[in-house]
Image (cartoon, rainbow, N blue to C red):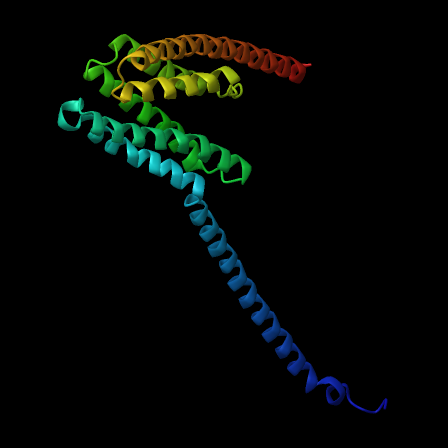
Amino acid sequence: MTGVPASAAGGPGTPGTHGAAASGTGASGAQGSKSSRGGKLGAVAVNQASLWNVANLLTMLRLVLVPGFVALMLADGGYDPVWRAWAWAAFAVAMITDIFDGHLARTYNLVTDFGKIADPIADKAIMGAALICLSSLGDLPWWVTSVILGRELGITLLRFLVIRYGVIPASRGGKMKTLAQGTAVGMYVLALTGPLATLRFWVMAVAVALTVVTGLDYVRQAIVLRRQGLAERKAAAEEAKG
């Protein structure tokens, strides 16, 4: 056995072994690159699919309903009870989807960047369209529309201004405000007469009051959040120096 040359024992087999190893490495590398590409494609597919989840579809529906609502609201001069009833139906669907899309997104982890941007836009678009239509038809004073829309736009800008310090959470008062606004505007969209017409005036008064009160509360929260954020930054800077 000791007289067997090394080349005879391992020579012919060695190149074959290295060749097999090389080919195996190449195959595994090719498979690895394929699986890597497949994983990336799969991730892209998942991200694209997540855009079309139920919550986002409801948000898109609400956006589509805005021009349809305006057309129904202003049809035949804007005073036909039948067209106003159809406009109310479109408005009601938009308000209902506003409740469900956020709930679905949070419950089933369907939150997407599109939803974060499109959801508040859809909310303000349908409410703004309804208020402007009602005021242009003379059914609702322009100052009411200005107060509600001014508050919504102002709070949105305020959120962006203080976002570096934290997020202002939605309050119970804000949810009550949204419910009161939706109910009041819906009652104005319908061609109501008699006691119901009087009732809608008081419902709108409550909605306006909640709009102002919750708006001031958001301003207070924003000021507190900014002060806390500045204090924390100052403390962190002093700690870093020390």
